Image 1 (cartoon, rainbow, N blue to C red):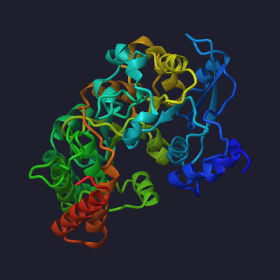
Image 2 (image 1 turned 180 degrees about the horizontal axis):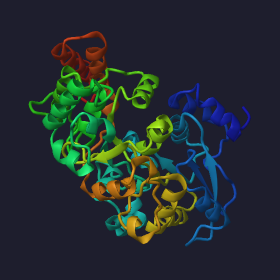
Image 3 (image 1 turned 180 degrees about the vertical axis):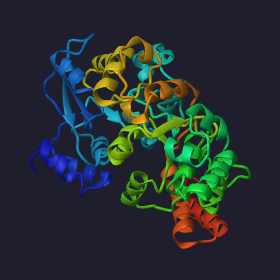
Length: 428
């Protein structure tokens, strides 16, 4: 068998499992590193996940090292390609971007450097503690270094609220929706007076409740919590059901219909991260000037945000760490926000840099100022490797709204499905 080249390797990832790939590489003479150049480190990232300007500077030479950077944009199926490279032990980048699903990599933690061994602990105080914790494995190894974050808020149409006789100023709306019961009450009044929805689906309510909760599906030992009395998942479920039964969700699970609802005014609210401001501007440009952002019920949550990791096969981990820390200085995170709108994980970025905010879409309100103020209040939480096995809760909420399934039967079916998935994997 001849040696696989990189194009052949990446092309095969879409049709080969990790185990099959491992077997196929045995005896193939494949290369662990992507680049044979001893002075070149290779980064894998996806489009708009890193500042092109800073990548250009690193290509000339990584500050604090003698190495230079080669940055490879990896297209669709990023996780599949990266995980298969790790499993196959071949063509592994020296440093890689990882999305907010970093917990998927915890079972493979031996394939990454513990960044604390490279000095990461000395940098931890410079980043939001809740973001730093998300990159720490259950065994206490710092596998992922913070890049950007996604603090959340309550987006709403101030003009519609005003016409309905409801509070419309961001501070007044924040006070009026201090908890989820008050938020549902406001949505009920809005439905009665203006006949519009406050959110598109019950699943969105459920997801954003959990994104702002210190407790999610599992504890740090990966023991399931969802079926325990008073669990956060059960509370999120009940809030979502109450919102749906009150008629304040539009019951629109299809993304194209959701975009149309925000554009037409059928739905006049949403709870989402800072990055949704740009999506909203692209989705509903004709509503510019009508939207504002208030505090969501309870504390803010986090939705999205990425990290960097250094695989254990990296040819120069000190140089890779120098690149990661340089790229994420407060000044460079501020510059990255200005270039590709990645919201910083370093609080100092809001004062040390010169961040520029586009305030036009939200009238005189500055979304940068709003999210910078709420970001420190995101509660620390634990995202388990096994959360994808509990996807049935979101699916069953869709069944409740789409087909009128009994909520209690839907809950029972979700618990059964999650338990079945975990039992198959030996978790319970």
